[in-house]
Image 1 (spheres, one colour):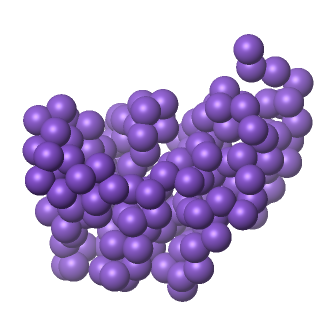
Image 2 (cartoon, one colour):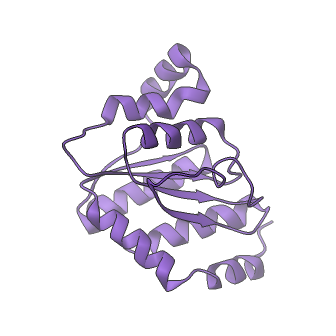
Image 3 (tube, helix red, strand yellow):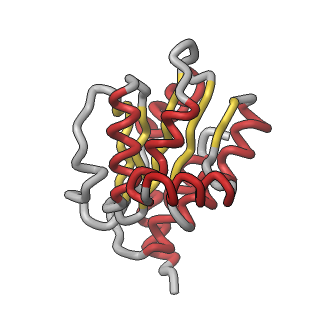
Length: 169
């Protein structure tokens, strides 16, 4: 069961600077990749809808089952999102990657971050659990914002990520 007091405490730690950084990154992008696994993919999908509707941003979320199963079959789950970025990268546009991993230890999310880095795509990284997780430990000049949630509860981390991304709508 999610602890609402813990969620409230985590959300109270969000700074105006973090929200302004997210807002600037999203507003500066012409296209946005929103990427996550499981519940984080659902968050990505919801945020894509709201960013399209309210912010008039072109957004892509890799969640079509035929695309996902083709890429996983051909390249493996660790490269799933990297391949997606290869398919949709457009160097003529200002693109942004929003990469979400509750645990921060998802190999496919870390690989997607490395692919964004390869293409010089700015990134927003959202993680939780241990601060020293794989994704949060990445270092790149293309990372415009890291939002780490100090909780080991999936419910708290996911809701904090969702609320944080929704704060600019």
